[in-house]
Length: 224
Image 1: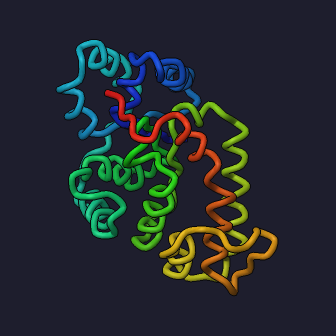
Image 2 (image 1 turned 180 degrees about the horizontal axis):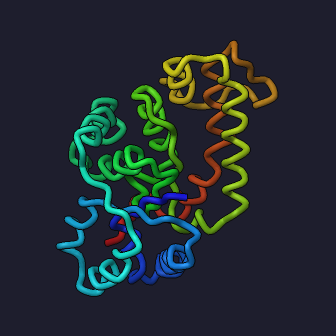
């Protein structure tokens, strides 16, 4: 599995609150459980990181593939910004998600709870991906990637989405997953594909458990 790690995960190795999960993640990288992907943007951000973070990044670099900022990355990043997933002040955060998507990674790992690992933004990033012909990605913190039960919940949710949206076009599916007004009005048992708004609410209820767990850690922390 190809996994993109943003700058905050490397910084998290040296933060007392986030060190345990960050170090375990990189242990799994060294053990070959994941294929690490970083980017030219991560390298650029490392220039201003503390010395110990830069040294740790240099140690891991031989294991990583570097994803470059090709034109497709800028196009998808701008699509996130135009959809107001994040503001233009946070365009680098959007670029990390774009690099994950365009490089073909299955997930991005980050400690950025404000602009990346956020339960309201995750479905919006993936809706834009769908509308632009890309597949959905998983967006987790290192804490959740160590929680097999949450991964199983997510997989069940994806299976349920596939079942409920099999007959829909990409545009219809994106509208369902990111309705204008959030908030479930029906239970999952009452939900049908004839009511896209309630379907979208049910989909989020099934899939968002890992992100709510991340939200408990912090609402706006960004390490590194």
